[in-house]
Length: 331
Image (cartoon, rainbow, N blue to C red):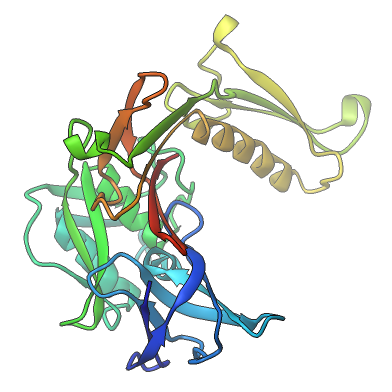
């Protein structure tokens, strides 16, 4: 696959032809790595790589010359660049709130981040008008528990998913920007494309923890202890709501941590990670299926005959010598 490379001022300067690599968008990774067999052209930091009209693209943050004389280019995908910013409340406000069509709220966030030189939001209302307060999410506890402050893409993802919307990000050559198309989420579960040849769907379910006992520093009766609980929606607190045979508990040893705040954070993190892993679906196709972050996908495992569906939270495009394989994941 050929990718266009710009200079640090975002003027096209050439083409790079990676022999391997991947782009990840959505939850967590939000980065890319490309292995090229030749050194030319060597990218500048802050330069862009992209495929016109494709979701493949991002900003170069580093590169390394390999022993073989090749080049590995690393960077942040579009969602990763958005996550370089922090959404914070206005002075004197506890939380940042926005009112309007979801599309307009997302556009307002791009402006608030100061990223209009690189990002644009496509015109066209979603028809979903809301007042959204950016705070810890109850409906999507797998995301960062940011409270009053959250990273740029996390905030966009929150307003999308809490109001059943999607976001597709692709390079727009006419505007010379990464274009976000915000719309009502689409349900692809019954699409024939989901079951087409070359499509594979796998599903994994696990019973998550709902109680973690943190053991901090100290000994005997003086040892620090703290209990954290997750409710049926995965929301973590110090109040237990699941009992009896449905309680799933574990002990987290934080004896080497003198700071009780850090020990508590580790306990909350363990619960959230367990909740995140409770249910995952992965749909793999050999071409860009056009699914967007926030869409509902699913399908049938041909070996077991089981079907499943869930919301797309991550897209990974892997470049190989045989082409590009797209994975749509939920986690």
